[in-house]
Length: 222
Image (cartoon, rainbow, N blue to C red; front, top):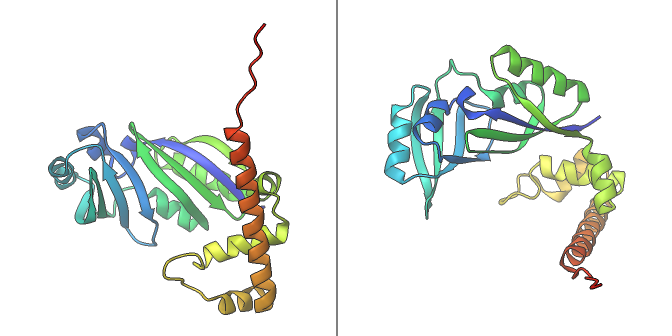
């Protein structure tokens, strides 16, 4: 059963621990997760010279390169010391996928998808064995939740998930619809129809939820 776990862990227990110590106001957002020691992060919360000084002084950051950014937010490519505990590598070794990873106020918040519920427990114990003390904030089955919230069928959910995982929605696309349909063993037309129906379900649900949120509440005056 596919499961998504939201966890929190102290930034001081990660590779950027001493950078957070130097800049308590630091905020981070993972740009992408790749199978290497390098991480691409958006950093903010301090002036660029202070960020670069903290990175240069870090005992765990071997190299850093500013890729771009501005307006108080900069994109860095970071290479960490190979001896540090790499939370993202542990996720990858358990066949997990990091859906999002952000940090502020000295706390990392990760949302991770695992193909099997048992992998969540293994991941948690592996973190604890390295000295990291994660807190599980939420654990849920995304299929059930999305079905209830957006009205997606099981087939529509699986199709969207496969399209996302294979890079169909990325720019530029990493896979064509023909290639994706071949992988899923469905016709090009059937895949196109499944995606269109899924888009419609998501859009309709979002409009309905937006209308509910914006609907004025009635006030009774006694």
